Length: 172
Image 1: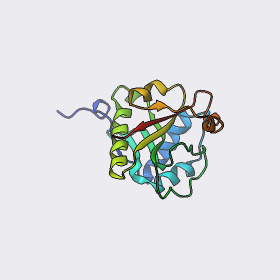
Image 2: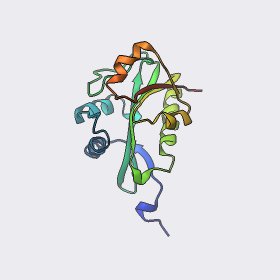
Image 3: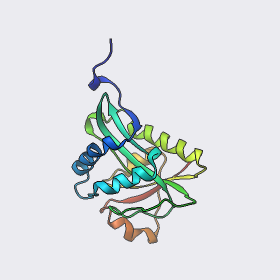
Image 4: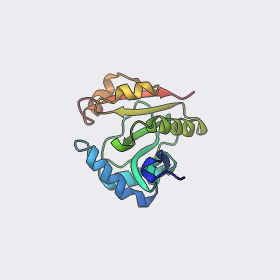
C-alpha cells in the first residue's frame, strides 16, 4: 500500500522555475523582517541551479534551500543581486533554507547540508558558510558549523537582524 502524500518523507529535488512562486510565498511568510525580492532568488537559482532545491512531500513544496559559491568571510548583502559568482570560490554559501513546520523533524536540514558538502567536494571547495538568523545557531552547530567572530563582519551582520551569526564549516 502506497502512503498518502502527507505521510511520505519529504525529499530535496532541484528547484525549477515553476517552483519560484511557491519559494517566494514561503520566504515572505517566514522572513517577514528579512524580505527579498523574487528576482533576487531567481538570479541566485540561475547562477547556481545545482545548489538550489525545494523540499517536497508528494507534489507539495514544504521548504527550499538556496546556495551558491562565494568567498569565505564575505557576506552577500540581503536583497541585492550577485551579478556573477567568484572565479575562485572559497566556500559554498547557504543563502537561505526554510523547512515549514509540517516537514520538520525529518532531518531535512541535515540532508541539505550533506548535499551542499558533496557539491563543495566535487568543486574542491573547502568550506561551507552561512548567516544564522532567528537564533538558529544551535541547529547549525549540530551540523558542524562554528560561529566565526570577526570585527569586519559586524556591520554586514546587522542587516540580518539582532541574532545574526556568521558560521562556517570545513568540508572534509
